[in-house]
Image 1 (cartoon, rainbow, N blue to C red):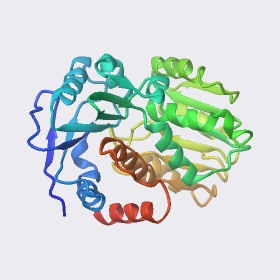
Image 2 (image 1 turned 60 degrees about the vertical axis):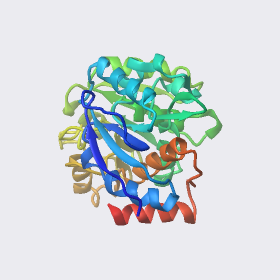
Image 3 (image 1 turned 90 degrees about the vertical axis):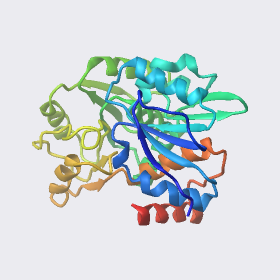
Image 4 (image 1 turned 180 degrees about the vertical axis):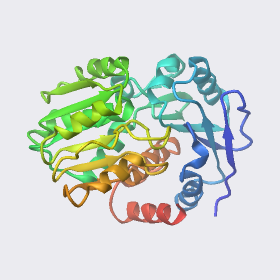
Length: 321
């Protein structure tokens, strides 16, 4: 098996890589299954002798720390690139001028989830619109008559809103997309970005500073609605965006983008699963698609998004997890 060293840095402790290194920029990277999965995938994909390292930053870190991390990755010769989670918006806003090239989705979404180097260029990519689409399509492809309620207005919610509202989907779109958030500035940012999508799917934005505010929205949703925890609560911070008093929609879907942590949202949904005929999904498939798309970009290698070869990667990840 390819040998990788499990390193974890902060913005102030970064040091030059001793050999080619791939990074994970998050909040608690040492707890992620990718620590065990990446060496197995690296061996299977033939990525060579490569290290894997986490970079931990607090939620909404100092912009100077984001810039310090990005400048390090840009100038350190053996640092190959990174997957960015949680910090996708804040990191890009603090450091977009440091990138030589941003892909069209990064410019549209105003975020970065993948950092790579190619032909002397330091590049920013927004992979979430693609990976979130793969993940939610694995859960359901039927959207007519459904409402989508996304709790959290960060990068994942922006990506899902884009995927679900694309004009080329025709009539297979939600009746409306509701997005809630604890702070108004993220909602304002999402409204501006959504207006550029060229979609006719209605967007409803809700300021929800308290979990009870989300409870009221969930409890009023029509049957068949899809409720998504895109807040990071349950992984990046403890708890759930719901208080536990919410009544999930009959015949609906509850999807937590997290697969690790205290996962309170999933517990709340499972408590109503039988009575409400609720389908409950965690974030494991999202994890697989998110990491494989970034690895493909950073290492310039082909990785399928479905089929037998993708299933092998999924099985390897499940075994390593």
